[in-house]
Image 1 (cartoon, rainbow, N blue to C red):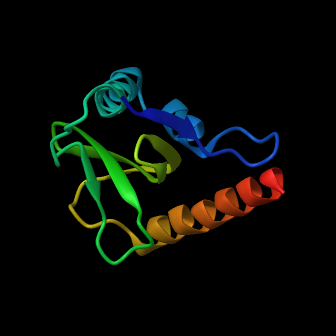
Image 2 (cartoon, one colour):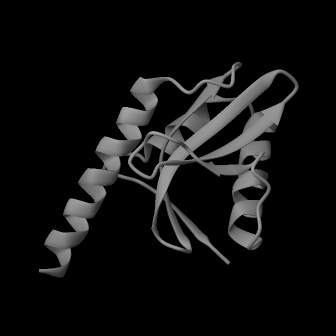
Image 3 (cartoon, rainbow, N blue to C red):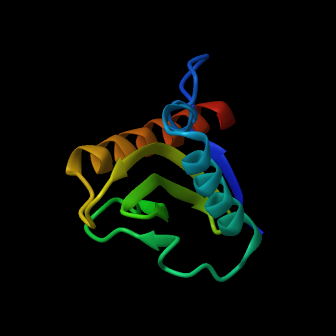
Length: 119
C-alpha cells in the first residue's frame, strides 16, 4: 500500500486541494478514485500512474472523463509515500513544462524542509 500526502507550504491550503475544489464534483470523485487506486494496489496501470521522462523523478497520477484529462503531479519520498504537488486539467497528452517545474520546485522545497526538521 502507498500513502498520498498533499504538499503544503506553511499554513496555506494544499495546491492539490485547491485544484480538486476547482473542478466539478464528478471530476473530483474520479480523481480521488484514481488516487485511492494508486494507494491501494501495488501494481497500477500506466494509464493511472507513470513516471515522467526528462524530469527530476516526477510522476503523474492521471484520471480521464470523456475528453477531459486530470493530472496530479508529485514525487515519491520512498517506494510507498507519494507527495502530490500540483494538479491541472489538460486535453492533450503533453504536460506543460511550467507544471513540471512547479512540481520539481515543490519537491526541492519539501526535501529541504524534511532535512531541516531532522537536524
